Length: 166
Image 1 (tube, rainbow, N blue to C red):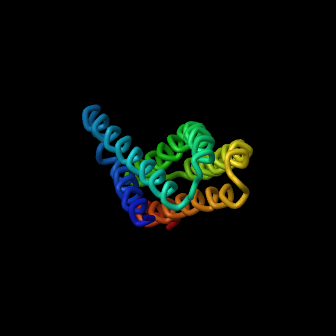
Image 2 (image 1 turned 90 degrees about the horizontal axis):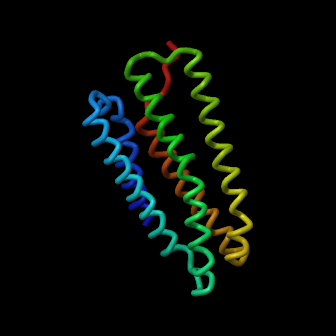
């Protein structure tokens, strides 16, 4: 099941990686944006499929969990958009050979801000998940979320080139 998520993550990161290539015209930019949007939808659908398989919910738990999860995902979307934009900006700058000290500093600041915003959203929604689920299932949910993010970050690390300081 996690392999399916990895597959979607590879598709998404590959599209993000080629952001600079696609950005040559407005038409190709629109096509690229559409493909990224579709890949992100597939990635989210894969997450939901895995949650349904790995997080056993009773009918009453399910009735409370899924609306809480939808609100959580809605709050995460702008942060995930910022992360995708950050990767795109980095890749364009990397491809152009234009990574200055100032850009690197902003890159790190933006990355940390995104991580902090993600944690704030997880913290904000913790009460709803704890209200919807018994403690072990709430913990399992957060464990699965961490696993999803770890897999995605691992895939990103494989395809995003490292800054060269030489």
